[in-house]
Length: 162
Image (cartoon, rainbow, N blue to C red; front, side, top):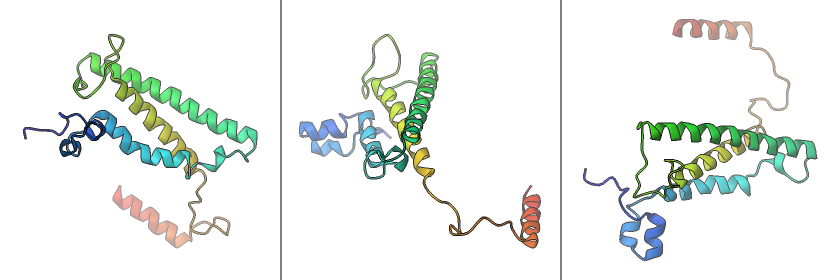
């Protein structure tokens, strides 16, 4: 294979420059952010977790935003250190033709830092959103234990699989 598809100007740049014949083949790291933007935009607009609504009590909203900020701070900081060390000791590298560098301060391109931020915000929003969904088969009744015969069969199946 002579081309990986990552050598060109990128989808957005190709469209803006009028090189439509190459725009669909060559991708840059920024193009990946465009693909990620769709679910993130939905989570920030129409699919926004109800815990973030203005009508919720202030403590619930504040706790939800604090959760997002905490997850964002911890995850991005950890991933930034992980990626920086990995790039510095040569485990991986970033294609300088497909990314913008941040200078001598770090080996990470701006796209990678934005990627970390983007993924973490989306993951935190999904975690809050999942808390809203009821995942029960019988939402109108109280949970009930399994019948003893069903419990014994499940335990036997797990034991046999082990």
